[in-house]
Length: 359
Image 1 (cartoon, rainbow, N blue to C red):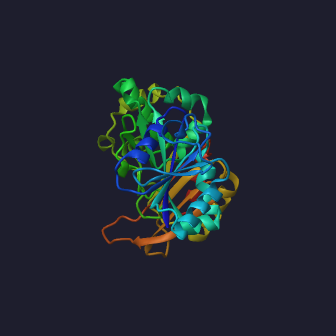
Image 2: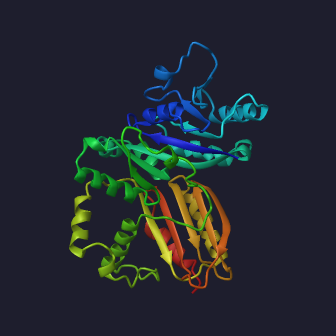
Image 3: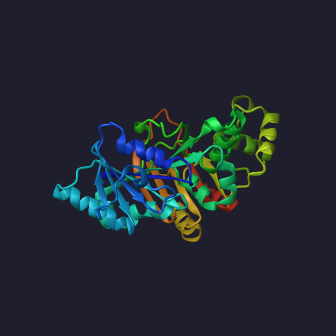
């Protein structure tokens, strides 16, 4: 299986700088870069000579650059066939989406098209965020919010153009949209190439990484509200350990109140086991009704009568699930799920999940 990385980000976020490095740097990897030529600054303007009709150009460091004008699936099939025939040699693929593109359909290609799914493995979606212009872009363009919501990793570029407070404010905003994605601040595309590959963002594994500050705030919000008496792991949360001063938390929320992003995330947790049939029916219904609004979701679940962790994740309506490792005797069995989407009915989903628990 050939691993694929989707590189996304709004106009001017630094994708071209990063791609130039991939195509020129002596990193020892053979990478095929598929460039969607409707980008704001085509890479071939500067480093490729397009006098030939050949769409695939070999670089001096062993990488290849493929400019596509048509269908992504066809381009991928073409690459795979050439690799099999021995006319092209590459180990992985990077797809640059145009700055105005929603990465969702690109990601779905790897699940919907069987020919592609047999040859390629989607590794991760990486989104570049321009520190100076991000807040304005997120306010103005829902597609930028989608790019953030889909990401497995976020690279903040051009951070030298803003002060420390603005950078923290941006990080806080991004975490609330997508607490799954690790955030890295990078300069001028100087990201370590190894930070881009083999992130396994779409692997079904028993690890669900959620930003710890986001979880602490989530705990705090539940403590303050006392509105839901869910038997969640955080109901008996101690303020002294949550890493947030109580009064500071309110100030913090007030400070960020002007960003009312359509794309938000929430975490569901419970110590009680799920009834497998009820949960399957409920999640099936949620995907049918809200699938288009669900960007990414993932969970590690404690199921009644199953001695192993059940893991699931998905993009829009396409969900995959599997059994992971056994619950260890020292582990506290619980379920944890994260949902990232557009104006999702959090209370409805939370109450529905509660109803799927074994009473």
